[in-house]
Amino acid sequence: MNIAYLLTGGNLGDRVKNLNDAEQVLNRQCGTVIKKSSLYETAAWGNTNQPAFLNQAIAIETKLDAEQLIHRILKIEKNMGRIRKEKYGPRLIDIDILLFNNDTVDLPFLKIPHPEMQNRRFVLIPLAEIAAEIIHPVLHKSISKLLTECKDESEVKKCP
Ligand code: GSY
Image 1: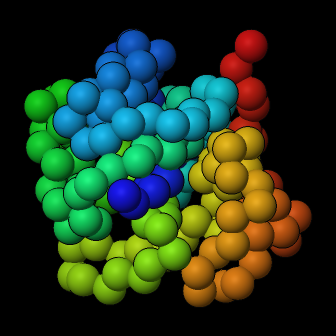
Image 2: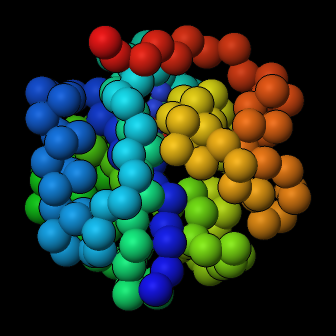
């Protein structure tokens, strides 16, 4: 079995419903959800002139390999209405693979660990809630250490 850490996010429509739907579909189609963080309201990264996101980190246990998983995820995003337009534009749902076991993957359409995860509080804060002690396979530091070193100052608020 493989363990994958994912980040779900979205800033359009009913954000809570979209994240809950994504979690359920991941659980049905990709593996078993074994951990999930709280929901966080997070300032949009990149293009800040758009609504705030909701983000959640999810750990799944899966028989799929990383390539199979990303193809399944792309289908889920498409079925949930995600249209890939602007790189940093608003979206109904986005599902990123952050970590996959202790593996590194470097394919044109898939980089694991997620190359920007250490630079983004909207990733590290939810992830630290469920995986503070996991060691990043390239930077060789724990998620909590990466969070203390992260220079990003954008707002991340735990939802009540
Ligand atoms: O990279 C994932 C999509 N995304 C996000 C996000 O999930 N959260 C925040 N806060 N900003 C974002 N910008 C993009 S693109």
